[in-house]
Length: 468
Image (cartoon, rainbow, N blue to C red):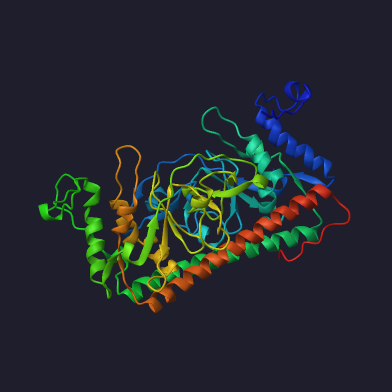
């Protein structure tokens, strides 16, 4: 068993930071010392940027049809594509909830320290007060964002957090973070790389929206927002509905029979093409449960969990040991559509070249399109649409922890569109995911290069290669 430790002078307890939590010294103070050794000139973050730190406010949620403003929680900020699950009443929208383009958004509560650079899409939605807004003023925002993602910036953010139960950071504790001031030509180069990655993600998101619109058009389906569920009238504001005995299908849980599901399925049945079970178009399997031995990256295989499917990148990379007996059955294959089937059910991902061969959790069901019958991109966009999601959600079973099995996913009804129609829609999806992967690779390479430039200090520098 190895023990990590760091010696700290008594000065920091008597006159310095006066903190007794070891993580502060192991992470934040280590980052400060490493930056000092790099010999780059430095400025505190508060001298280079301003902050918007919002207090708590009462959230009054309404539906989109009532003029609701799209609202993203602290986790949803990192989703790709962005999708608002809640909408605020226009009168409940506080000043400062909308980030500006090129603002840096940092999770300041819960999973502290993760950051994202805001683009046009994020600037159009209200964002939780649990996200700290950083407005770069005396420095290039793209460069500052990449620095916050390096081991130096991220370690400082992680080490500076405080709180016994729920961890927090605020401007008073991160404002003194030293930011290395590289030569302007280098900062601008990193800034352009960050903006290029952001543009690719935005374009990819637009392509997914185009694919979703094409799905409804080519299948002859109304936009789900136009499909209105029918409830029994009630004078007490309680929504209720009736179900005929012949429609029970062996399920007595009300969530299986909600009018939203019935209305969308009725609209789906009115489309151009015959509905068939998902099992007719794809093979479905769930790997066996296995013990996860988490190890260092150099001796492990990247591991994907359900929470990684919705986010713009894998926020918390984990690796399982190469000697895991069930590793072969856990590996993800190019072209598979994966669905979270336990806990937070319904997240859907598409396995691209970037994730091909990685290991996946046994909480991910694998859906492999049958050659000549279906297209993976088409299945992905259908399953992420309200027509697919409502069918996934209604199949859930479990008293405490929600679950899905192969037989539940196999029953999902999918329009059997001609293969050329599926490929027309699916090609847009593949292009979108390719742009996301390119953006992530570009950004990760830039972060590693920036770390190397900081570590080497002023003087002859490495060539940044093709990162731009």
